[in-house]
Image (tube, helix red, strand yellow):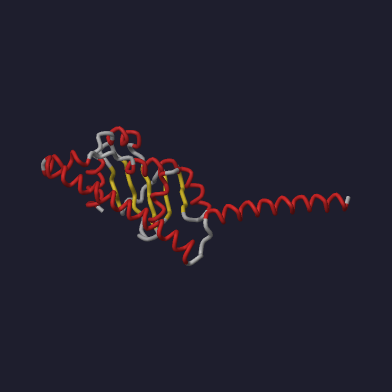
Amino acid sequence: MQALEGLVNHLMHLDPETPARLQKLNGRRVRVSLKELGKPFTVTVTETGLVLSWIDDGSVDCHIVTELAVLPELRDSANITRLIKADKLDIEGDPMLAQQLSKLLSDLDIDWPEQLSQRIGDVPAQVLVNAFERGRARLKTFQTDSQQWLGDVLVEEKQVLAAREQFIQFQNDLQALRAQLDKLERHLQEQRN
């Protein structure tokens, strides 16, 4: 847990905006119970960073019970209600605190080229950054091509899914059928009266 705490705090301090964000949450405490871990851990926000503890059982401002896969969805407050209704999230205390803590980490703006440059020099850092950008562009192209290919296979070859035009036509036909049923129902109601 100490290694994770050290890594998180180190990364947070690579962003010059971190001290201001920490100041807003200073003294706030969140306990997180992840079903995969079986044991809750407590996150305490201080002026200098986050303190993570497995053994802290003091009072907290917010207690979150969820699964690891759900944590990224907490960034958007619109998801919280949906997750609670789906029994994927239970929050006792201030639900906005969970979102603020998630935002503290997700809003990090680290100048990676500058950080690399300070450690390995300008030229090697630029080579690594360029290679990373090319790799990311290739991965995005591969992902887009794969999605297109999979869509084509499911729609055209295997005919598991309907084509977009067919689905839109189905929706229009369904709406027309509903309108006819409503009209027929009103007509029957008038006949009864």
